[in-house]
Amino acid sequence: TAQGVRARRMRLPLKIARKFFHLQDMLGFDKASKTIEWMLAKSKGAIKELTEKPIPITTNIGDQGISEYLSEGERNKMELGKAARE
Image: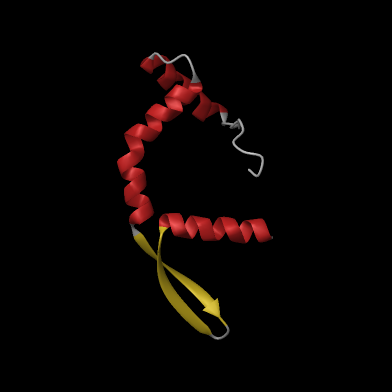
């Protein structure tokens, strides 16, 4: 944010929350943030692979369709920007 980093909360559906806290208990962590850090570290390779993999998208400009290849991360940024403008 413009004011700097701030604490954020997530709302989880009950089914996901149960799985998350079960994992936290299995790992022996006392804080949810440690469990999130562990999950991100373990999935780092898969996340990197997804964000670097080009996927085809089609953008319509007038009567022409233009096909572009963007990484998943670039596509997400584009979609987030579009949602923010709406």
